[in-house]
Image 1 (tube, rainbow, N blue to C red):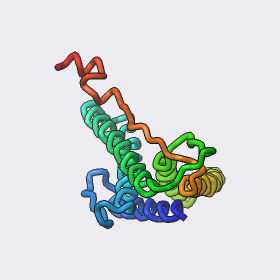
Image 2 (cartoon, rainbow, N blue to C red):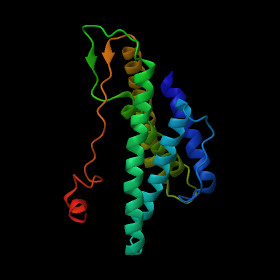
Image 3 (cartoon, rainbow, N blue to C red):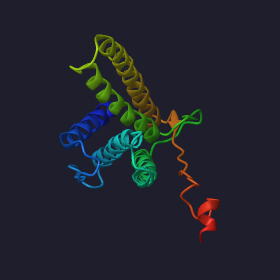
Length: 200
């Protein structure tokens, strides 16, 4: 199943990141460029680094100048994340381009790649909640609460994975069709963001 394949790559990316656990470490993709594995690994690495950016920026003692620099990094990361989702959707569009779409076919509320984006984020939630549930310096109450939350996250993973695989099956069989809208983020565009436009 594609969801299992993707989740294993996400776990690999997360484990690799946490060897150094440093947002500034170099990124090395172990998969061949142009492969779906390459895209999935890159996608999750972006998510993993941004997860830790979000931790750092919430430090109440952070220097304001450092916080602004980090905010710019988060903005750039969000744009990279969106770009990767679109690349992954392009993979599926190409893969299923010859499928004969049935007259009764319907469109899904989100594209396959945006559902996979949610699975990538969920893999990070599971990793970090498992860490919390296994802490040796935490109270029993904390451990029990985190263990309970972890069970919910694992159930969510099962449901989301099933939904992704069903969507891909339906697209492959012509019962659903893909229609991808390129993200039109206005705040990064000098012509669409009035603040940036005013600085030209």
